[in-house]
Amino acid sequence: MSDTSGSAVRFEPCAKRIRAYLAGHVVVDTTRALYVWEWPHFPTYYFPTDDIQAELIELDDTAAPTNLGVAALYDVAVDGSVASRAARRYVDSPVEALRGYVRLSWTAMDEWLEEDELVYTHARDPYARIDILASSRHIQIMLDGVVVADSWHARILFETGLPPRYYLPLTDIRMDLLRRSDTSSQCPYKGTANYWSVAIGDTVHRDLVWMYRAPLPESQRITGLASFYSESVDVYVDGELQERPVTGMEP
Image: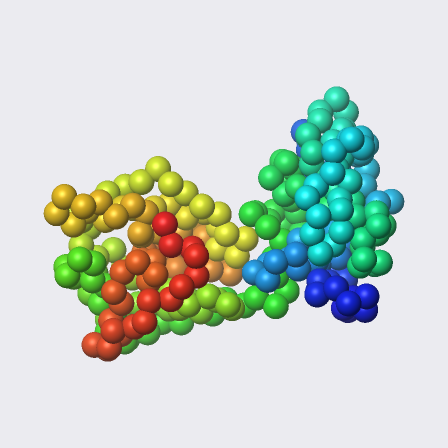
């Protein structure tokens, strides 16, 4: 489905049952959500107003205008708990199909479920795919002229819209150069990642390496393997230096 009013916004129905919880109470429970691509990397869920089970308290403030129009802002209240400015509606949106829908702030809710499974960070893109393939290609990682990793046992993760990520056994990485970081991140496809920084001489390159110690089921083949931001290191594949990608994701 696409909008016909001249807007560049892409949207389509979502067949999944989606639920969001606040303080243990259901805020929305619907099988009528829409995927809306407000930005190109992943969609956001929009919900029919009738399927919102919490109270929406309209505020005097509005959000900055976007190509969806001007959004009215709401507090979300359920059983005495209030999430401030956690909902918005584009009542007069040029995208007519969205006028009866509500967007909830992902971070304001305590839990999100797609069907009966928890999902983290953002809605999963129905057009994103992850392939994890074992590879005997020779992978070398260099930083500041130092070989930080050297492996013939990579697993390469191919994710729609992103550069290949080379996941390597810890035994093929210069662990003496790694410094454990307190940083973590979450991915709706892979789970929670923990990070290391890399120390080369007196220079510490923060959060260049990550690992999923207990990834989600579809990504279990990278369990216990570590990957480097190829945006910030030199990656050689079978002796050929790879061009550094530009993604905006590097630390």
